[in-house]
Length: 307
Image 1 (tube, rainbow, N blue to C red):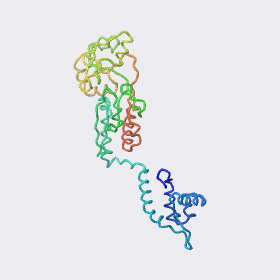
Image 2: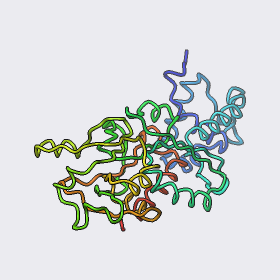
Image 3: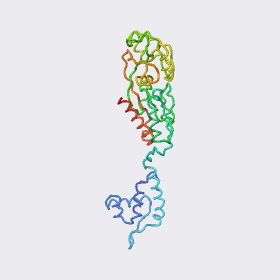
Image 4: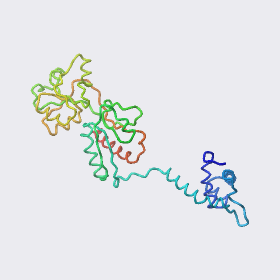
């Protein structure tokens, strides 16, 4: 008895063509095989289905009742298989109602979201975007189950698992903000000044120390953190009205000087550049909508990298 497990499903394609042509030679031409190979295929079909299927008559090859009964069902099966293996439909941004969910730090929100929102409004007005805060632990589970599409942030801070896909968008370096006409910074910001002045610290996890503090500790120094906040929102207004200084990425510092009376100084500590990274799960690497979203973010990243 023939079962699906030992039936060669490729034979169904040959059966469909044989039933349309009722001729082994013409069927062989359509399948791009030799006549002898097609005859062998017909022989296998007869064995698998336990029926002669095609019989020679004076007027040509004729299908048996068993073959006639199979013609329409086989065509339906092949249509279903074609639908299954067809590539995903192309993403149409102009008509899409897709909802994207991103996880990002407020740094990434400040830099990327204005440009991303402008692109979506222009290219894909039906799309909705939700931005979630990045948490202390990396949201690998949310990326895997699809409740989160992309994570954006400093790779060294996010520390994503190695199996996830990632793309560096651009890099940034640390700078220091102080209020204009700061009485201690008339001649610039020295390391002595940096350690002596009170600091404002932005820490999304609440940790009172970071890479700067580790570097200072290696140098036998320590800075005084006077105020710690979890985000950038209030930072420029506070620094502009106090003697505190704030160490933060250069690109955000430049943004803050546009709406507060602030000066930018190099951080007098040798620090590496930070890589701003987009991270996603390989399970959704080929999703056409997410491919489009990642391209928009990559394009925006390239504009910052070129600055």
